[in-house]
Length: 415
Image (cartoon, rainbow, N blue to C red; front, side, top):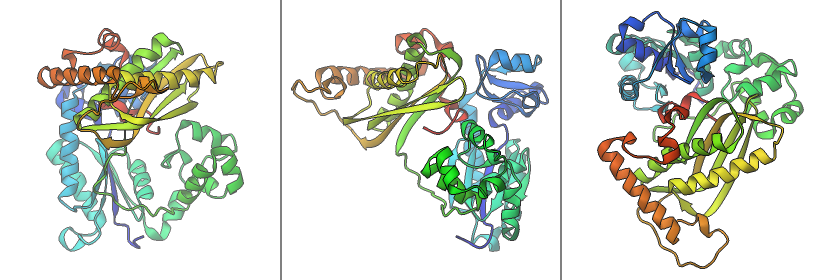
């Protein structure tokens, strides 16, 4: 680990909403939300009223009657996100992009060209403002975890440089929810034990953390609370899984709700896998209930799959199993699917009908091959005429139910 604070975490402020205000100057200074039935992103003006994502649109309107909903411009988000990350790349080749609007950069060794890290960070912020018209907050620290926390403390539109000599003092005074990996559920568990700051977490016994969070999460958070983070910048990040998730608001935990939502998610994931000639063996489904508690179920198949209908079927089986184990839960707020153990599959290997128990999920059977060929035909139509040109019935007929895949990172990120 370097002795100097040379790691930057840059995070565009209220990115989607800020791009909408940039595209339509009449929205500047006004509370806006991207979405409709669900708040997918909110401007700082809207956040001041308590509007957050993912929040039902009706609740957001109750909190902020003057709230303006806009539909979203996915292509523009990609354009501005790429442009901002490119500015980071002008200062160092060691850039690790972790989402459409944020990235790490290690500027060690570039001081003789561009000045100290704090100067580089300030220059990046200035260029993003002048060239793109957007605000970006930057944290500078010795470790990735502390740099990310620094950028959160810097918001909105600020710069925080954490002095290595005072990093523990800086870290321990902050609320625990700023830590990487502490979501609403973990925060509530810690709050139940009177743990609200990172300093209090650092002083908590390992036994208590293990009982609350499990050994892996407990050990990880304990290390991060003392800024023990040995992770390096990864410039060539290869996907080990593909996933998508949908924030539902508060919906009944019934098949009429979860089945079309899962088909939509499987459609988005399957199309991305097939475009990259990939298939996956491990299917994971996540169900989040109305109280933000979540359960996860996984199944590893003997053969990798990418067919939309098969992905959806497996996910449905997993969700039904999760709901059967939690019969007292009547409402769900989020569904997610992830496909792991990816491998290249440029062509389909046909199989003989051997009457195996898992045959209905095998991609090379007559049924599996028919699905794969149908999906490839759908992919070709979409490539030529756009995504909305063709789709699966339950999803195509009820688009209001689906959260756009481009916003999946706005919901909870863990799978």
